[in-house]
Length: 573
Image (cartoon, rainbow, N blue to C red; front, side):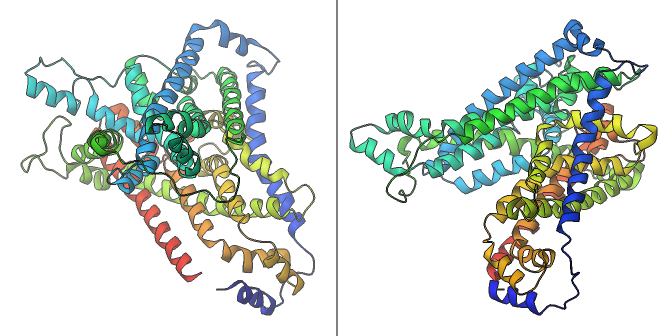
């Protein structure tokens, strides 16, 4: 549908619009909603951190963070883990991004697609997959190694239950952040600069080292900061791998403070430094990406300069294949294999093939149906409400129809600085209060998911609004349509592909969330992600694999449908 036809349809639409513009009440409603989502839990978090059990002001909780070694050590371990993950993610992602973006490596598109699959895979599910592969006794890698070498029963080649194993498992699902930024940066590096270096006599390696890499260094640093942030605030993977290894990081320590006897004040105090570190990392990322690495003079630069690998091509193929194998192919294969055999260490043959775990999960396990219902209801509700709110906030900020509308942008993006476990603590303290009792219902989970996913939804919609010229909306206003009718009849249809993408992104983010969810669920409100975590504690890896495959199938199906709708919308636009 053309823009002219759309404007005409808005002009000839039935004139049932109210005579006054509703944008100001909508603005106040959005501001109130975002304040409730963001400020209220943080306010209760700060309150509980600064008072004792009797409600009197105290600094005892903050003093304990410094003096109590059981609290101080998890902070230090979390920082060391996060920094190690950032370095390892950069070491993996940077050469892989160069191979995919700047060389004639065969199968570059397949590698990109498989790296994207790491985004869809919940990190806690990846940790469980590596638990299946590299547990010291029953891990498939160790079983095969003992069988082929004749090693003793309790000898192991690899052990995922170590600090190093935890860093590796997390890096498998954080390196895509670095890869995406670096690959996009390499796509945008002007080939003219590299050509000039070659003309002046520099070898290919010298050009790469002294021209190309310095230009993408900001992307590498920003991606590494994101990887550090993801690792620092992650709960699922440390809970699955660090606790059996006998140590806590700060997210698992905060969770343990809610076990009996609960210490909510101490948990709130431990959450605030994590919140401040997160804000600092995000500011650092914004500062790095906001700096100008180079300026192109004289118009559009040439296409990216491709490097012919020649005799190094087998090495490049081996590296790329190794990365996607360790991060995607092996973990997925481990989940599928475990779901089809009774025991983890049992080989997959026709005689051992069984659907016992599928039958148990879908027909015998009583918690499955309720968890699936809760997960999909919350996923659909969060995606729908979140997309509508993000659409309205982005419209207000980009078009600024009401004075002060830009404050909505700050409120909508503020939750990106709140780690999931910190938000979970704040929501628990807020909505377990007798005057606001929502704990034990799906409502508290809906509030938590809306808060967590709001920044991503808003940023996508805000970027989409910048691609639509306001003149189309102004023409509709001249023809008598209200702002809201213009948004509904003209702007929203033009944004349909972005709306679809935002809905899918929020839905996938919701069904894979665990950090905040683990503190907010009860027996009647458990989700698939929490059931997977509970089953891991009981060691039922077969049922976990079935539920994990279910999550992956749903996620990839949503992505596939979104791509189809996107392609269909673009072809008919």
